[in-house]
Image (cartoon, rainbow, N blue to C red; front, side, top):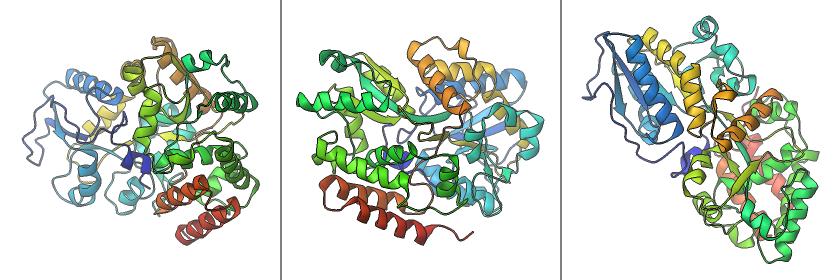
Length: 431
């Protein structure tokens, strides 16, 4: 389903409102194709890692396809999101399009018969070998449009995951070493509280609060737990050990002052800015902030994976999809192939993105090297556990409102879990 984080973080690196980029092949908005043009839609900002990498891919494509031009057509995320089903069911469909991953987006289009089955191309071109199992989950969909199995309907060439961002200057000020274990992380937060500093930057009005709680649950979970929750491969019990531990620990953290009680109305943007301005020593969030922090944070900062957990939030990035009505499918396949090439993947990595097939030795920026090394660690242990709002339509809003109640203390963990169970069971498909 549509990742709520994509919908609400207008200033994230990956999504930037109405995105503009100069067309390498020009765009007059007309439909059709003459066989010498690849019509391409995507919504990445030109100064984002993906925008820069794909602009280079366009140059590479045109250099290796004499006489063929790429017609990049300016679209925003919202434009594609709202009009895709209608456009893809017409003769005006582009040859290649970036689209959001998940059951209610790419999965729905595949179920409606609007996307090309890419299974044969994935095998022939080796995409199935380049893309790890965790990233590949959102590429394949069954006949019900549910991700995780079935045919290839999309191909990501970047990934995203969550991590702990920390202000090294503030840690040094209070003589706190980088936490290597969960106990060291909580000890660090205790030290900040004793010095009148709220350690965790939180956005209770949007996705950040629920992602703290989901990460706590993941620290007590395994892959079968994730598959049951996200892919309906088994029963999800919100009163199991993982969810109970998460709700109780989160509520306890509020009482201890790790999370501000006044953060219920704070949005994700405000939480990120609080970290950028050096007000909050710790932010647990995603790689979509990485490039922005590199540009805007004026202090020494670092990252580390959540300690004591094999799993964290994350997935493959948005997908390249080839519309069923595309007129130049083979050219579209060639372009996807180029975006997965070593040259483009290495460029994406050096620009602050998370490539899925880069040469680690080709990444030169120190922070980018850490970003990619940690992603490789997660990939090798199958550690991407998707996002808490994905399984059920409307679940994001339930998570926001119920987690806000935990922050204010107006509900108890047991009642919180009851509310999640009711909403989940109501919306989950019967399989």
